[in-house]
Length: 299
Ligand code: MBD
Ligand code: FE
Image 1: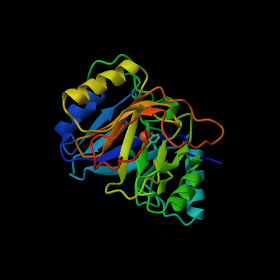
Image 2: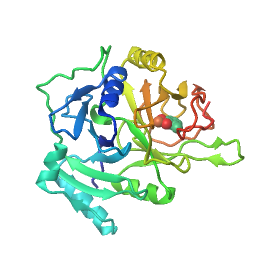
Image 3: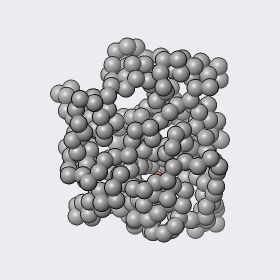
């Protein structure tokens, strides 16, 4: 049965495009594309037309997530599967699909209320080499693994699990984290390709729809450049450099110009065939700047 193949793109609602250009390109290494539309700009990470659309409407939160399916047959199948489950799915107009630079588009909401899109046929500008916004030693790990992963707000974790299973993702709780108040946090991680997780949730209440977006570099030295640049600019770091237990990625988390987190990473292992769970990370990930929803004891 058809399932999604990757977390393909994100739309972000932002208030300060200039600050976002400086952060995403100057710190992160993304390519900034302004097509003169006035209310938006694009971030490129590979040969796709874009992986992120920045909508300058002041929301400073996730606007939508785009999950890719292989083609038109799989698109019809998944829309049918969702509809049978009484999930409201709107097939977008050709114009709306063109706006996203895809061939086919459907819009719905996940159980947390996060605007969700299913698409196929992204515009890939393979005539135009990716041109990083700052020198890069390597590239972003995308391809079949998609853009990266994110942690989303879900008030009903069981409902979220059922929804993402319907989309074709698999996973489970992967940590039991003892909180200072005596409770145990049990975050849930799900995957749909080799990326160890494409979406996660269940870390407690959140102010915004999204806690973080994780992006992965192919070269360790690019993570080092991003880290130097974040420290140089005195950007808030919520979790210091450390290595996760589940995907074994070396990562750190810093604030983006909309006040939520980007997790820059390197060296993630691929999703395995069987689930495991952990009590803590391998090393590091010490808590630093508070108030970003990552004040959890991972290290
Ligand atoms: C992750 O990417 C993450 O964000 C957390 C909180 C735990 C394990 C892997
Ligand atoms: Fe993460």
